[in-house]
Length: 187
Image 1 (spheres, rainbow, N blue to C red):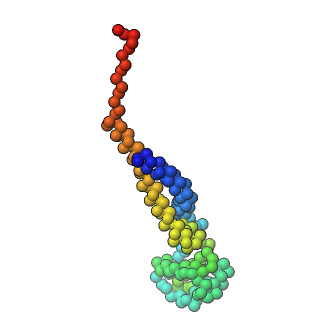
Image 2 (image 1 turned 90 degrees about the horizontal axis):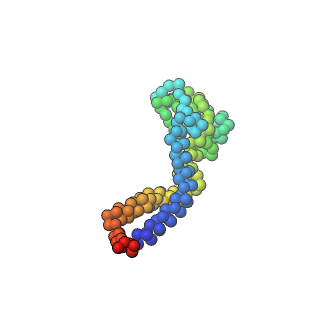
Image 3 (image 1 turned 30 degrees about the vertical axis):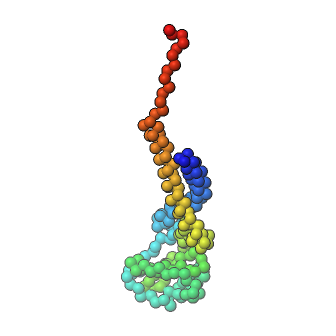
């Protein structure tokens, strides 16, 4: 049984590892990029400083008017906005459009546009969690890959421990040595 169990785990460990390696590579590379996104402006634009901190006096109509003139944003109304990220300590508001990856940073006191930069971190996050490829990948494939990772851990432990236990058992119970045969020439 031990030999057939070992062969089963050896074969499945190999094929699960090969298939899952592509996804693990994607998760590893994108995870690393997400870890360093604040230090690399190419991934996520650096946060600007507004003219005043904790002074949120700009009204939403003024903010909408200032971002409507940004051609990259393609924003005409609040329906075109995916999200607003308010940073009171920095005195800014980040606006992310619904249909593209541009980020507009607006001063929360004056409603002036401080910066317009392309934001790649959202794309990297979608690649990382599988939602870029479709909701079914995020909902079904990624949990299956998590299961594959657990399987690889436990089958790898088995493949490492089982031969060690076999060697230990062999050392504890060595096979009997054959008795030396008498030398026919001696007398």
